[in-house]
Length: 119
Image 1 (cartoon, rainbow, N blue to C red):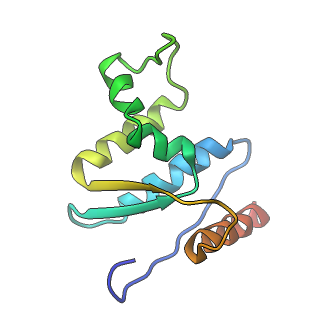
Image 2 (image 1 turned 135 degrees about the horizontal axis):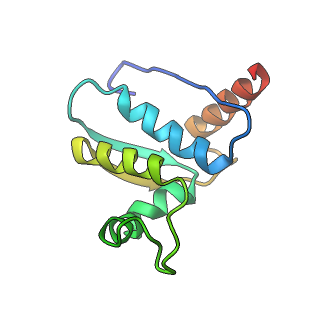
């Protein structure tokens, strides 16, 4: 959403995980932006938000995409794509409580359920 503009997108695929879909949603949203933009991103995904807000992703990059336990980062290709997008756009990640009173988060859940029905 920007001023009076609002765009809704949704999608999905078979044989995937919730984490993959959460990352994909953020990536696809940022890819819609035509110019470098300051973004307030809201998500109920602790997986996505904490990676940036707690600095995990910066350690993964520094450690050649290895976790603190020296294991490869799961979904590395998606994390790399998202990390690259955050170099283009200034993104502030905000955690919201899922399945609560946030109208936009509830709408995202509705769109996700509709996408599942179409698969």
